[in-house]
Image 1 (spheres, each protein chain N blue to C red):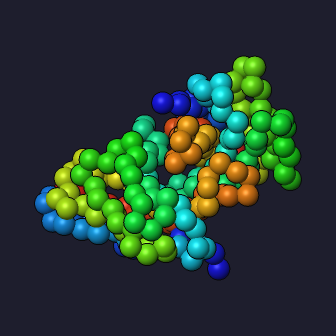
Image 2: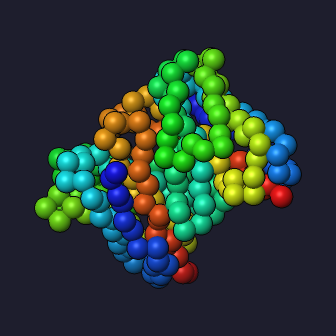
Length: 111
Length: 115
């Protein structure tokens, strides 16, 4: 069974700073990685997807994949209080029938 | 609007009283799934369905049933709920989940309390 590990946090950053969230995974063969954002009491919302072909940027978000060290990170530039949420890292299971989620990192951005 | 809907959103019930949580999607997705989310345990898959009449167990299927008679609907059935099934439940749908084009969409969640 694949495993996905994240620091639970909370990670606290001031408004305007860069928030860096990390996720490690157990299966060296994993190629697809998802980052979801979840506000308290709400459903997960996909914010980034990265495949094995390197970094990906979308607005203030950058996902970075380091296959040698088996970790994927999410950078949030110019952090805003509205970014305060739990960020979930996920990888597909080997059968492609489910996403395996980490327990999430809680981010708090103070104004 | 593309969406996954769940009903009810909140439910308080008693041990042993059968209940059904409905899930419906309007995106013509083949794949649907149920997850539960618990503090400290994260999101765990209960059951999934790859298409109509095709369902299979996820990681935590005990105490749950599902059916997929229509492509858009995937109800979750608790025949005899117990307090350890108190949780936040999410239904999700997508086309195959491993490609960049196929985001897994989540419903708004159902918060279930079993007394």
